[in-house]
Image (cartoon, rainbow, N blue to C red):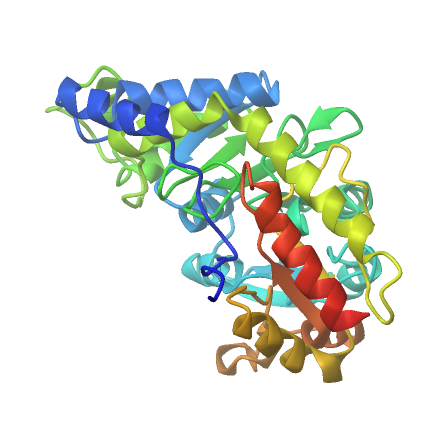
Length: 376
């Protein structure tokens, strides 16, 4: 009898989360409201980011676009970001009327290579978006050094890294602008949602206006579960706000975030211990201390990857590929880019394995047994 399907992602939705949704419906205010603000305050407290402020959004992509808008990115500007990244970053840049400029990554952390970034900085460069891939920090201090030298904004793509710490501080506790994602497959979920961390009250006011169609007063009133019927529109804006329903899910998940991260770290460590020494296999270059792991990946020789994926599929074990090289997409052919030797190699080798919050040992054992048998 075949084993049941084992997905790459599986959100942890418990009775506590279901009750939170029911309670939110009972309140009767379904749009953005007091629970949205409560979620933002929980994130601020968790990150320890004061005086920085958090603004919740309806998606992680919205958070990225909002951060770019707060940073003043617009038509004629360029923003440097890895090709080895989800296309959401590139589309958020394009939504501002700016052009993505694609850099290579480092072989160890799969984050933006500062040398590649430096080679691309030019007179039109306005910002850098580095990704903390799989929750593993990139060379963020070197990126900030480049930004200071050239007077650029930094928008940290921490959509994989909610809860990761660098130098004892949570990503988002310092720096410039930071974006998170709470979509269905992330460490915590609000079903769909995201957040942007801004530097203080002045940027928060701008972000709040952009989040709701450029309106000046609506956020304050909605946080009271009411509406502003007299208002001004101060700037161009979007509909990027997070509802009370989604926020109630996020609030319930925040209460368990440390539990979720700890369980994921444990599974990742079990994987790495089991896979260490497999011929031709490259593991994540971390022991997962202070890393909030969104995914667990292996790198296998390119010629072995497809047979490996197919063999796991035959055992009802799903895999993923993070990511396809964005510089190969049709839309990217006119974008400036550096040489991509590491990106192109990694994109042919990488395989994402199942990783869930509170993943039962017997499921991890299935993955370990299959991977070691197929790759030894």
